[in-house]
Length: 92
Image (tube, rainbow, N blue to C red; front, side, top):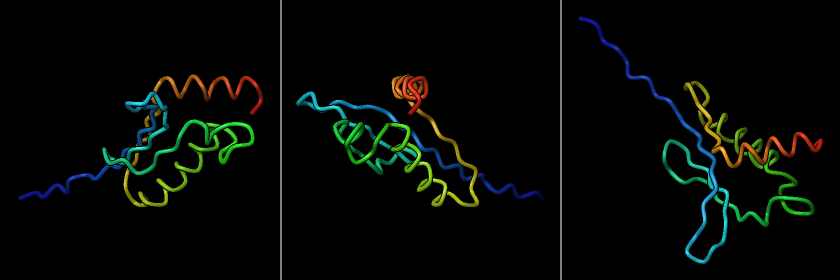
């Protein structure tokens, strides 16, 4: 008899969300669980995170530390990817 161990995969998902008051946040989900949320005003010049790329880089580092030894996937919502591409085009 063969025993196949089920593969544990951790998924990091990064997306925008808007609350009932019209405030926009960047949210990070790890395998479906909300693990981080920052208001968009915290990202940008003179903010806590200088760019969306910087924020995602920090989240990715935390995620990879947590998922050490497990296959992992990172999904970035299209709208955020567009902002990353704009930052890269502008040299950030």
